[in-house]
Image (cartoon, rainbow, N blue to C red; front, side, top):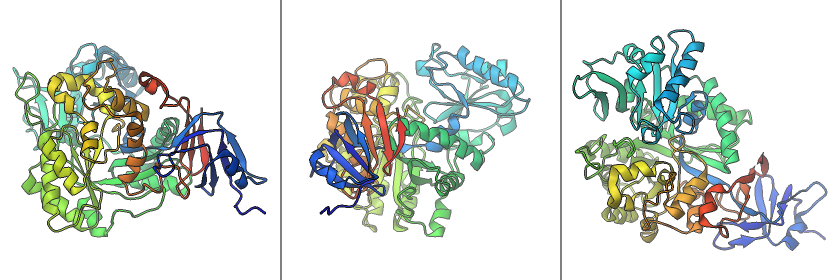
Length: 538
């Protein structure tokens, strides 16, 4: 007599690393109705086999939980796939960027916007930002805006500035900067931080967002990502996700954080979300509201992160968007309304304001079990780490930056400060949960680059940033699975292979625990399952 239900799928002949401390290893998995129903031995798993059970023999390959990206901008990435690709591997020089812009201008009617993304001055031949004069040469009659890889600045041509009403007489907004030539005062076309919101770029429609997301989620599946935290949710983004879900087109779990305050070209929804009474946890397994997202500073690569000491060889200390006295009431109000809070803070000054806001709120709200977060958390001090642990704050660490942006971090911060950038060893010592992320599309979205960076602390150029903050392979994988699941309160549902968890599972080409750590970055995903359904097969 058989006592088990018939499984839909059995994965066998596997080396399963479950990320479950109660049962770290297994040989086989049984799946029923999108959930894992058995994890254990190959001998026992066949008790779940029925006439219609699909058997997936992975030939001794390594099986892991689906990856969770704790900080991404999926819609922005999807829309970027509809724009000019100006990433360094595509356009290694300003000349190459201009060639792409000219080709686009030649095809578009005059007056239509040309949009691009991904340029990185630190990795281009000229080692400088493009200017409006560069762009004017190839597209004088089209408004052009090209976003830097960090998303904290963009360069526009003269036509875009004219349409937007930005001139030499326009003042920089608080928390933003319109760059001018030092000698002449003329606009260079570069707009930083909040100044980006002054550019009158037309809004994308929901149909455009869906088109881009369908492209983006193909890459997520290829990278083994089954859940993404959307860190800049706009109303039209939320609608697009819902439409895709209703039409059964959504192939990645979405964890939306609503953008709180008007900044950087994004509309804030603080008042609207609170007025509707929305709380963290609203939704289902595919789309589940997380809370409110705030921003306090910029990026290290763009020298706009609010650091304590000036950047190397200059007096600039970055841009701090707000002070604790003005900012703290927003945080307190969101927490009192039952909304978790995530605060972008990279530099020490920004992290200080973020922690202070949480501390002030904690006097009237019990926040320790809410799993509030500091996003990126790039340069925390030991005092910051102690206070974060006291409040049980999560460090949503952009460890992927070490690989892609590490060379600019070393240049801008110097050898000593870079030893505590995205300090995963310190996070572990202070028992602070630190899920990893890429901030896609700021950097590439493949989690293995973040895992490689966490283990090796090595940049894309092969430069070792430090030997202080390295962590083990197991802890690095946990950062993209179990720890990331913990950050949304779903550690029993996703990011783990155990009975009753969702059957979000990946099969990878190599055993990361056995290969040389230098080869971690070369691991490929061969199968990705979401809710027990195969959504990617290499």
